[in-house]
Length: 348
View 1 (cartoon, one colour):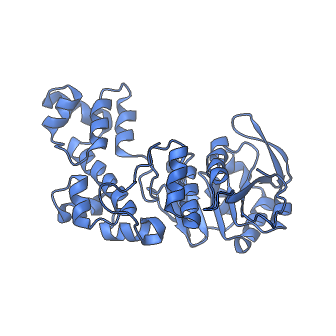
View 2 (spheres, one colour; view 1 turned 135 degrees about the vertical axis):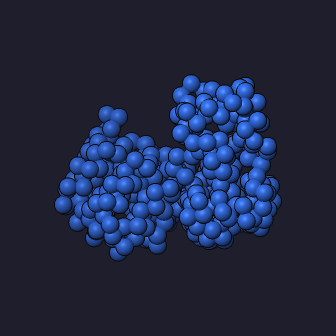
View 3 (spheres, helix red, strand yellow; view 1 turned 90 degrees about the vertical axis):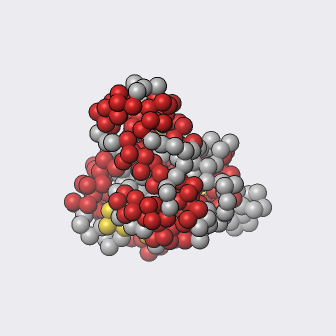
């Protein structure tokens, strides 16, 4: 990583600049930074030249207390910058009042190929007018606030990340890694993005339209005591299996009556609605990461047929499966793999 971004004309690489502010969340920077740092061209050389900058330069404290060395934003913008990413964290609400920072970011919009944010960094871009008229996302807890304070932005509340032309925004914290992987895929291809996902031991390289707060995670958080963990692991492994109340109760080691009562009590949703959401999430991955026909995706996700999946998609996503694929398929709308061997899950 370079602070002052020296030029090496003999070994050109795309320059990715991370904009820091006092108290920025460390993982919002470190996660995407690691992705870009580890990315390699087909020839094996570093694909990106990364730099950390702030408005005035110098050591910049993060939310963890760890200070990051930064160069000056204006010095970085004096050179050629490919991608500019604004970090996030709760202190973004303080940084968005810095008019000099807002002006610098607004001025960068037409000078970089990609301008993005991680987590609450979207508020900084929004306050500077950068996201006017665009689709965007942020941390799930702040999506309503973003929509209320900036009605000119179309907020996609369920998206992990959103790419709207040159503007990229991600959801909270670890979603910045997913966004970085998507950028790498756009630049270097899917194989390199999957290689990086494996190297970073990521369970799943999530498509942009995947829920920020998945059905399994929601159930586990709600239960708190792990009573549904075994069942949830089985459901995630094979969403097409028998997911009747009787089957799920058996996996949870409960009677049907006890299971139905406890599940609704701790999650606030009926088992059938949970199963539908789980299967829609599985279908989203298949639609985004494979070229399987919609009929095959429906069967793979556990739906009784295409029409059943379409109705579920309308309820859960407000769009048809075909529209979801067009919006979120790998490679800008062209899914690249087929069959059950498709590497939607990037395991090490």
